[in-house]
Length: 458
Image (cartoon, rainbow, N blue to C red; front, side, top):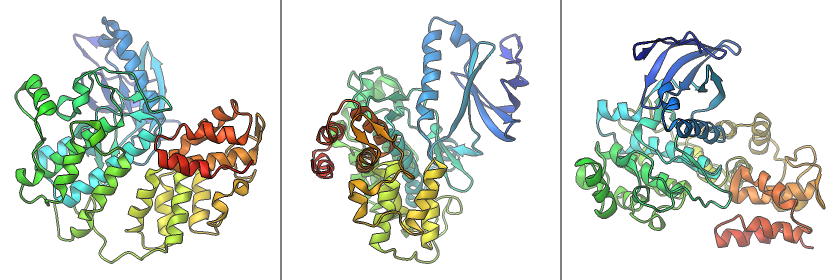
């Protein structure tokens, strides 16, 4: 890294690794984000570095570990609503992350400049935030610092969540043992202030705080210093958004009440559940008149969308759930409300799939001739060698058995099913044992029973 240090302000480097530096995008307590250019691929990128003094201080190893954790967490999350990480490296002893360059502004800047948003626009933004969180959670990643500054809004209304710097990677069973109080106090869930385990439901609380702020222009709890804020978050009930801003529809009150519940068990248990409750209100669709962001976010279509056959939507759900997990069901229904044709529906949904081969296969199954019909989807021999994601054989199991197990498990857990099947196959001696081990990875008892019912007869 070609960087000189005169006084306390470093000069902007000319290059970092193989990337040309064209400007500075921002500077914070942890480091600096530069506008770079990847000369090999010829595209702009954002490059995040860490301040040298942090690495040389008493907590240097901790800061570098946090930086690496951000790379691992964000690298596992490839989704249209998450800022993509391209590369990681070190130059002159300083680590750096190369990310997708997002040409947009943060929600923090938006709220500061515009104040509260219309309910339809607020819902359209949080819808995308929840899709991003749902994908991250399915990869075992808990963000733990969801706030307006970490949500970017592009000019066309697309939302991208960024900064997984204090994210935690969950173990496969969804349990964690990290209890450090990390996050931004105004957006932290009650358990983040104490010694309780922090899981994905803390992210959903934070998303509720952001939604409350977008609707009313202020957070549910604020002012009085960090200790006073902590007491409010832990002990005071949140105000109803309709009492803070009377123009907020009252049907949003119970949604926010549940999202901001003190105990994790009383909140939405998944991003999918939160999203379904929000979408059921139809806020985006009912907002037909001009609004502050209607040209950019959540503008309702001028003509009604076609009604798709349930068999078509079911086929799309089954195909997409393998790539995205359970959140795919919400995404299919949401996209179907806006798509003008079957091909447009397939193309819009395919953009959420990171793998190009899987995107092509998905398009064929939805818009073209389906690979399997509705009955064949659940048969163990539905998978073929040409489309299988599994090895030809593993332990006592052939490829068709492994692919069928992956396909069945993906309906409940998403793409991590591939890894789990490989792990379980190496420890199982029969198909019955394989399915039993895989069923242990499904937390919900009803879903566990449904999965076991797919097990082939011995």
